[in-house]
Image 1 (cartoon, helix red, strand yellow):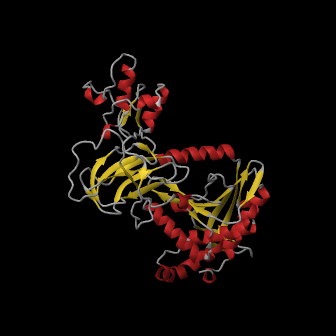
Image 2: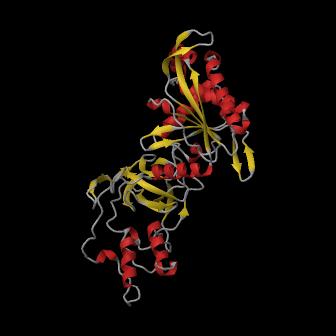
Image 3: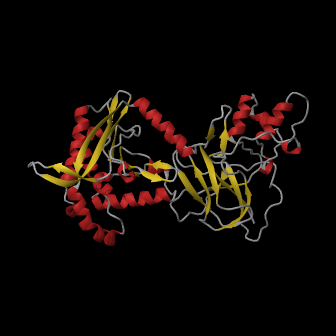
Length: 430
């Protein structure tokens, strides 16, 4: 019988914290190996975390909505199937970060790490550490504070009580021992509120993903002078070709053949023709990327994510379709990894999905360009031989960083994408 600690997993080298958004298991419930234990979010990705062991949940150390440092224990699982739920915390000292190798999970999702308990180690939430720093409390002093949280951990109320009594000669006392009246609480997120001026509002707290999107969009506009080149693209031949090929493609590959696959293929060809667009800026240096890693925006319930098709220049249209299908499914089931979301050299987004005619997107840093398509609509057009015909038309927007790409190159890139979409023969590409 062993009590095994599950810790906040590392979602990427630059990720230092994760937020618990949902527990899938309650205290006392049994959990199977690889069953989903919880959902976490970072400023880059949301993921479902499977359990690395089979057992009984005996402690959930943080409530939903709590942000926890990577490597810190978040739950304790008793791997003896007959064990009862612990009636009291295991010890007054928190476990050490002495790691043991967890069983390999069958899923590609991130796996919570396993940590065995050990004497002599305490951990603190980012909030408690920030409060201690502001109050001038050093680690040696913080360690002497009696905590009322799980495993005698110091929480916000404990620290507030300690700070209030600091210097008065009293011993540190757990805040839970005091039965003072609860402090007034703010209205829950999303609840209707009336402000002092009579304005009726609903205030919803941003989740981590929305905060990250907001931060990144503002940052991109501050860094890059955005310029947009826009043209209309005749998709008539591709509409007819897709209608002819889609059923056989679905039977053969198990994937719906979409216009996005054609657009991605055309973008790749344009990037090969104009390698300066597949670049980034590092100070005064231009870094031209020899591999084409194409990001494709995917809508999820919490906002857009941009998984990246790696080395897409080596794929035909069918290969692009397969890779995009894998990434889109991972995005919708919260299985994306940091590797899926990093390393992009250029990005595509499709606003036509929402019925939008034209859009001017924001560049994803440190890239220097992004391509956006609108909805395909039938319009009356004048053809090259001055005839009038009904054609399936689509607007394409190339948004680029004017520090590196001037109007000539930006427009030539757009013209190349347009040319490939209007002249390609899909039967030879799949």
